[in-house]
Amino acid sequence: MSITTHRMQFPLSREDALRLRAGDQVIIDGEIVITAGLPTHQRLVAALGGAEPLPMDLSGESLFHLGSYSREVEGKFKVDYMNPTTSTRFNPYMPTLIRGLQLHAVGGKGGLDSTCVQALREVGGVYLSFLGGGCALLSSAVKEVMQVGWPDMLIHYRLVRLRVEGLGPLTVGIDAHGSSCFEMAREQAAERFDGILNELAAARAEASHLS
Image (cartoon, rainbow, N blue to C red; front, side, top):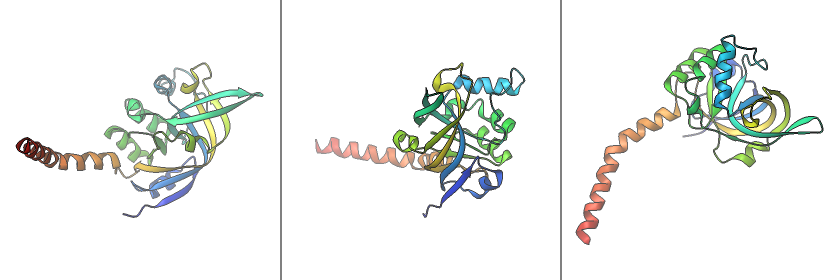
């Protein structure tokens, strides 16, 4: 199967999100917002409910589950590294954030559940899967820290807006039409499961006979 690679400007628009299909690859230029914090997601949902103002304009943004370490150098923040964290931890909060902020691109590693897939389909958004353990590759794409939100939180929990160039390639794990590579993989595994068990049983029986 051929893979289509798109180099795209971010934040991702709804129109561009709708062009993508599950399995496509994306290379990002532009602005993204990252956080790895469960408390951050809880705080974002509370802020959407009126508990406090959002720390930055997040409407239509691209929000990724990436942990980072940033430090202040000569009055400016510098990101020393960033790496993906598991998105499924945020399943309870993502549908509210996707709909409330009209997020057209989210991402991390491990995918999101069916309620999140439905929310992405409603707003016209995609889930981008990042390379686990690809810290050096991902971090090299960071060109500038543009904004830091909620500096009272732990460093990797803060919302950080970055300017990136050539971030990727990332895989469209869930597209804006409801197709999910993660669900397809689960279905394929389920279809093969009984056959794999039968093969293992046969191999054990043969090994026992030979011994």
